[in-house]
Length: 301
Image 1 (cartoon, one colour):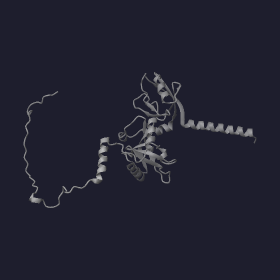
Image 2 (cartoon, rainbow, N blue to C red):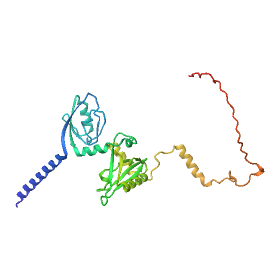
Image 3 (tube, rainbow, N blue to C red):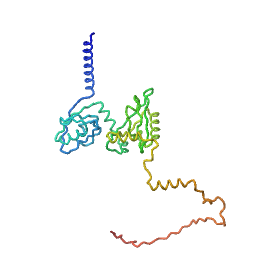
Image 4 (cartoon, helix red, strand yellow):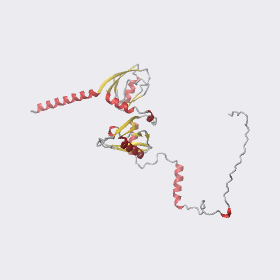
């Protein structure tokens, strides 16, 4: 086979591979256009992340029932959106009808919706913050299956995911910087408590669930990176005031020179002089009168 024939054959195979990938992609993903009627200034009620993937849909808003978690926005009324600024700018002028072009993966949407629907009793412990998404992560242990591959640390009363090994169980549902709010419904702020609960549930049930707070904005991700890089021997999250620290430092310096009292306040021997403590069982009461007795109280300013 000559060189030209090899090149033609290679291009043909590359084209066929590309077409196969497109067909495979179309089975799970599709590009659709959603029309949402809206009034000028009316909020959409859907929150996208940095990649314009919808991560939260507020109940009772115009996006409920139209958009789905996991949808990736591409255009609004024909205007291409490259970031969240483009998206919200286009929405500002979209009334009375916002035509949103998006990529939707039905299977992925179902999985994401199941994960973000946190049971009410566990959702109550979450203090939701802007820049974060919240979901229920489930880790299922299998005998002779992948290793756990999870590392955690605590930082400012939060248990954070500090290590996720490739190909591990943890990689399927957790990412670096995730904040574990609870373990199987038990709120956790200490890594040792979280680890004990995790091991106990895996041993007894073969599975464990976490309510996860995941950084989704630039600021939140930056905070997570700082937290993961922080020294384990960090100072306490609540520091003493300057005057208290000065008093404590002075006391520490004086501590070696302090002497115990010459006479203890507690004596084990007999009391001197025959003095003893006498406890009187009877009690007397005396009623104290007050000037407004039997009279209505007067208002004062």
